Length: 588
Image (tube, rainbow, N blue to C red; front, side, top):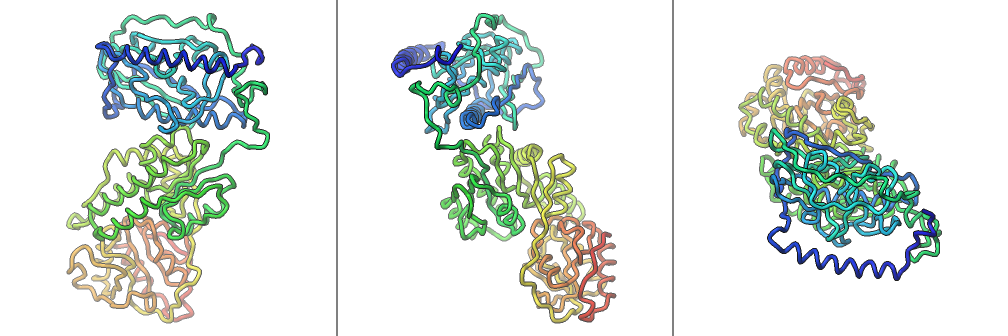
């Protein structure tokens, strides 16, 4: 149909809303009766339940830059509606209603302007695009043998939509609804991948008995729409909905959602950020992320204050501390999720926020990169379990493990990430094995290294005395070789842990023959980098992530024999100042 034949007028729009108000009032009164549809209860995910039906549809259907905002708005609306529907349990024979579960789409609730088909035009409308979800639900309900109680077809066929096959179901709050009855108890699963909307109906029973299904309206009965253009690109400039955008450009750019600062990641942000990007950080100044060059910088003052005050009351070690830190991460992630601009189709995220952002649904329909600040939770806890099997007497190695659901959510999110960004060799290796491309950064050595005047015989252990830091392995080697050990942190295992070992009171690099960290897990080897900058040899496990750096001898976690051999080699090396320059690292 030519654009001039489907031009809308202000009077027509007012008349439409007047009629809609009447229909909404009638539906509200009708739904107060005994036959009103009830909300299905939320249930835990049932991935083992049989998939009775599945529908997939692309999230982005236009490559035109002018359509970016409306498509991004549609995806935002789908995220919010998906959160309302995902996991809903539908009892057998009970009527499911779309609008009984999804609230009226308003800006106050976070819904954005998307594309809505109304009276033959694709117009901007708050909540626009939700029909893609109702289409998918209707198609899945048909395939699952559900009884269709209420369904309305679109007034026009959009190319590429389910209306082309007569499997569409338009909705308009609250009187144009989609309603159906499942034949058996079912669960709705709705998720947004990077590019697709996926809707599944899972049967909670082993056998499904289809009920009668109303036939879909034949596509030939629906007038086609010649193009998918909206008011942004239709070319009708004298319509009352037309907005002059000659002096504006579509919003875009990425959003950086950061927390813990590392010099390597800070340098990456400064190099990769582009004009138009947004930056979300806890507090500028206190967190030294570069804030210049961003279109907008948002800070989380309240969440940072709460975390700062709460962290001061936490113990140095233990399950209560770890659980509290995860709660602080969740609070910050929620703050960011509420404020991410709809137009940001790509995110760069600090790892500690990732599982909570994944849970919130804000990552659906977006690409994202992850700034890795530690091992993935699954790999980290597996390393702790290996250490516990080796040293079951340790009181600190098995005192906390994250909720399995949180571990699964982080694993799922990392699998979907476009890139893992890290200087840590072990993390980069895991990234290459799991699929996403690793971006391996160079470690940042201190700009002003410590001046080491002499090299003695002491061994510096640059960490608190914890099993996960390799304290048990170093204690065994030090006892056997008779080495003095300088401690770089508190003794948290047992107050007599170092009995039989000569302890040096000087924990500085001066006089250290080597810095040794045979850790099972280590995400921030800053003391080791300081030693390398000062020319002091470093003995560290693969878990420290320094593989390949000159001056580093790389060990296998838990291998005391290899540690003893490496220490003996260091002690046998010349100790004169001329020999302080360390050779390239080697692996044992």
